[in-house]
View 1 (cartoon, rainbow, N blue to C red):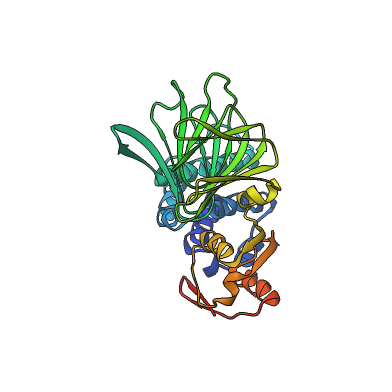
View 2 (cartoon, rainbow, N blue to C red):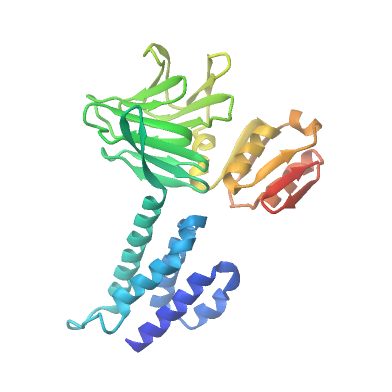
Length: 327
């Protein structure tokens, strides 16, 4: 066990310091193939959970898990074990432990109109929530999502401020309703995306598969969508427009992609601000009128995206802390 203890002390030191402070290549030189595989699993866990609040507790969680699983005083040998299977089992336990904490971190119970809601919020990054009926909701950065504690007893209603992709489990007896400010999106079972940030002037519902109805608060149908269609609801005028859409542009954010088609520069800056958690102040009035189309699918940093965009329309920008000013 001594070799295993030493390796895990090295791992714990690496993960607690953070990626920028560690010489990963030097660490990997001392690992065999099985240990490298385990390292890759743990590193992916850290990247998937690398949010500011979670980082404050991860070293504590990792140390606790280490002591429980590898402290010689707490581990009793029970015959021979396959070290490869054992290491993967440990990695799986660590994934579950960190994932459970991550969900707890953002979940809270709130009271509204006498009802208890289970609420989730995501400040940055992407997070998924599994509902009691096994439907899956993937939340984009800057989103808040909630549902009542009695969800799925008689009705399946959820509430959204922000953007989410819904993979709804079919139930012909219980419609699934996304309740928004002025409209409801109603389905029985399908995959669709809703973008409804409070600060945006429109609500966009994009259908990937199945069928959805959009209704006003009096349950009067406004429109019904087919796959590869999007409904754009203008909040100020209460008008709805139906367009053909490419679902890749609607849900590309789920895999970290930045996709936009014929979007104004201020709209694009909103997307970039949410993704990278930067505030962006546009001082250049001329560029506000420009429209851009772009695909960034290789996890390009914010600076690289801005540098590519200003090839088409010259502008300058200054980064100070988490604020970007564009001139």
